[in-house]
Structure formats: C-alpha cells, structure tokens
Image (cartoon, rainbow, N blue to C red; front, side, top):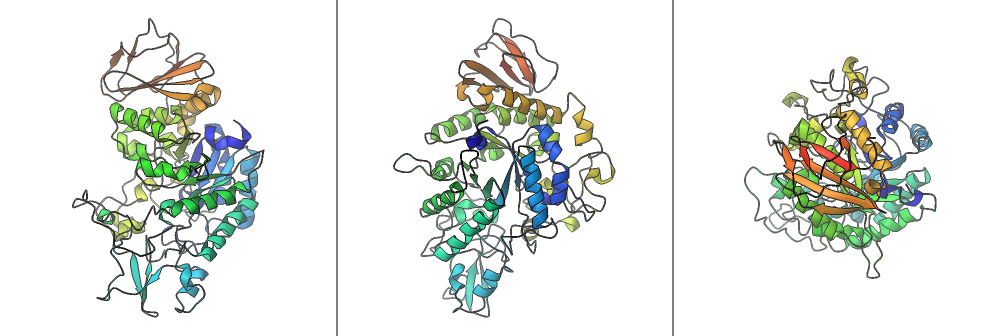
Length: 541
C-alpha cells in the first residue's frame, strides 16, 4: 500500500464506541476498551479504525449532539487516553478516523446557549433563527429526520430555530464565515493530535436555502413510510453552495498531508448516484478537490439479486469522475445489519462482494462474526429516533448491540450490565469461538482480507463486468497481467456455468467450503447455492 494513498487500497473498520469494549464495568464501551481490542483488528487485517463520536455530549443522540468539539466525554475517557490510543493505533500501523459532526451542535453547547440568550447576541447568527409564520407556526414545512417539524419555538426570544434532527441538536449556520472558521479549527485541533482523517456526518445538509422556501411534495411518498420523506428536501439539503464548503474542508485537511501519509475525508451522503459523485469535487481544471470518499451506500438498500447488483456496480463505475476512488459499504450504526437483511448464507456472499469489488471497503463492527439485529423490548429502547417515531421499525438499537467477544459473562464486553441487551446467540457466535474454526464467518473475513492484500489485482486492479447466467454475478479484476475472476451465486440452486468465460486456474477462495481448491476444468464449474468463489493463480490465503 502506498503511504500517500492508504485510503484507496485500505479497509476501514467502524467502531460504535458505546458497544465495542467496556474497560471499567459501567456497561458502556470506552477508549481503553478499544485499546484492549486493537489486536483483533490487526488479526482481522483492516487498515483504519473509524470511531463514532466520542466528544462531550448530553447524549440526547448518543454523541451526535456535541457540547464540546475539542475534548473527550468522560464516559469514554480523557484526552490523555485518546492520545495513548492514537499512539497504539499508529504503533500497529493502523490509521485513525474520527467522526466530525458539523451540521449541528448540542443545545447545551456554549455557542448555542449564547445564541439563544438574546436576538442581539453576537452568536445569534451562528444558528438558523426565523420569525414564526403568519399563523404563529413554524417558518416553513421542513421536517426533522427524527419526526415532526424541523423547527422549535424559543419562547424567550419569540423565534424558531432549525434542527434537522432532535430539538436538542440545533443546526449551525454555515453561511456565517465565523462558524466555518471555528469548525475548521476543530479539524485542526484533532489533526494536530495525529488523526488521519474524518468521516463527515450528514455532509450534504450543511447549507440550507437562503430564502427558507418550502420543500415540494414527494410524489413517491406512501403511507407508513418514514414521515421525514413526505417532502422532497430540495431546499434543506444538497444545495449548490455545498461544493465550496467541501473544497474548503478538503484544503484544511490537505494542509496536514505530507509525502509519508495523506489525510482523508469521508462524506456521509444519502443521495442519488449522480449527486453523490458530485462530492468528489471535480473542478473545471479536472482536479478532485472534494472528499476523497463520498460514502457509497447503494449496497445497503439494493435488492439482493445478481442482475440488480451488476447494474448498480456498472452504473457506479461509469459515474465516477476521472481519478476518483470508489468505495463500498454494507452496513453501519444507522441501518439493519447485513446478516439480518439477507440471511447468514448470503451474508458470506456479501463479504466476498464487499472485499473483492474495486474500491475502499468499510466494515461495521461485528459483521465479521455475522452478528444480527437484536430485538429490543419497548421498555428497553434507547434510540431517540425510535422514541419519536415508535412502531415503524426505524429504531437503530438493534444494530448497535455490544460486540460479542467470547462465551464469558456478558460476551466479554463488560463486567457490568451492558447498555443494550446482547443477542441470544452470543455464547456460540463470538470472536473467540470463531477464531479457530476454519469454516466460520470470522475466518472467511480474515482469508478474504489476506487475499485482497496479497493479490494486486484485488487491491489495485480495474473492474470488468462479465456476462453470466442464472442469478450469478461475475466480474474480473486485473492488474499488470494478473487476472482474478469472482463468481457469486445469489440463487438457491446450484449453477453449472457454461457461458461465463473462466480461466483454467485454481479456486483461490470459496465462501462455502474452506478446503475447496480444485482447478477449473475445461472452463467449467458448478457453483453451490449462495456460493462465491475467487478464481486465480496461487493458493488460498
């Protein structure tokens, strides 16, 4: 891996810190817990650790409501503990990516407390304040992503403030140059402490329409859908001015890059493909000046069928600006786990897809052992989204449950009571039990990652879609004469392949049988149900 472009060939591993490892028995994961489990990440073979927010917060949205951007919440540790974590991560030749949450602060942040103190306060314009509509209601029809209006009335000053999420998360005014300067200084604070990059939360939302116009109706909205989708967010997200902001963010981060290692920006963008790729920031001179990795979430919502995935990959490859690095994501802390979405057999196939496609893969903690969503009883719900919009299956607690390390009490996660309940299968499905099992999900992930590292065609090669039959996805990766073919059977039946051009080479890795390694005879092969194989030269990793 080249030092300056580690993020192009590397693998990112997301840690939801509350749920990874508790070191002090309070039931909440912390920084010392992450330090204690770094060797798991090394054994897995990933390159970078992305940690969800660890800043001081009232925890109205579990860290995404920040009251101080330049410190560590005591629940997670201290700045000294953070510095120790950075040191140990770098000692293991890993990179550290922090979550950056620039769209909103906590309502307990000193900036907002000043802003709401009086209309004349110097920080009033740091947030989005508007007079009521003529009827006294909200200024427009914008909706919160967590249900209800995106506006809350402040009786003391007689104006509404905007919040794209909870009322405890007021939106910053990114049209104010003082806000931008302050937020860029936040980035510099962490970059000086050795951080290697940032995942930027809800990046497309930072700039709102300067005239605060109503959003138009969504013609695709149907009853029972997430109520936040009732209107098309034309005026509340993805505004044209965002491209200037993205370029400014990139310049701040680039100032800390050097010949040894570049810093990276990853953007959270739930946008159509044509708009998502715009955040690479292709300038008129052909220079990419935006985020290096606008998150590609297409696999999260895609129908799990070979033809649909094939079309999705082809369209994505065709849409990428020249020189842009692709990336792929199977899941995160906001979406149901892949093993719950597609089932345990198909989750193995999904791992093969993620780790053999061209581009940077992002893994979500626990997916490497096949963790599934956990049913949370109503009285145990922690997620504010579920509390605001109950009964619609939108809550995010099920995919945030504690990591399952062993069959020790509480799965080795804590000596206390975990903040969310464990899955019922933690005694059988855990890192310790899978580490020595050649047929386990963990072993499959480790072998796939090792293979990806060892085969230049997989970590640097181009992508070539191949024609195939039945419900099989076929593609080739090639680099400097080395060619690897990947075949993924999305169907429930065995498929004898006769039309897909197969090299007469060895099966390097199969998702089903770890010992399978026969040669492809006369260009023919039979794929088992839900089986994936990698065909190339050499032996299995």
